[in-house]
Image (cartoon, rainbow, N blue to C red):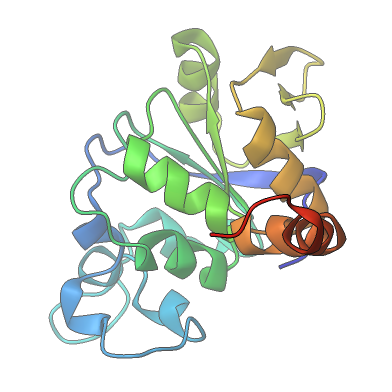
Length: 194
């Protein structure tokens, strides 16, 4: 995982509310131990028609959506099961951040652990983003802000530890590994034996 400091991208808008983790990646695609290739199954039942062809009505199939790394989603994105594959599928597809007014807690935590930035914004900012698909936004993880094309900046909440891990490109295990010298020193020098 590489560190995430800034994300500058056009947005693709999926305004649907209550997109759950099974819609993000259906259970039938969870037969792999690798994260590689999960993006091919992202939103599968929404992206494709029954005959396997692209659903022209689905926003990710719009040619304007190609290359966008920021998804603006409807309220309550990522609800449902605790499927860690959901943020992994979004990352494998190419997304680096999700913006909504509400992102389900378990999904948000799984996203942060895997390097996907969950951005919760106020209703006014969200409405503007929904109404302006393809807008160029700039997300600054260090400052926890989203800058809109007109110069407005909106702050978003992010836990200090999660921010540190995103900036450093590490997960919890990577954080512990950064402190191996201190851990080893403690183990070797503690005055008691377990």
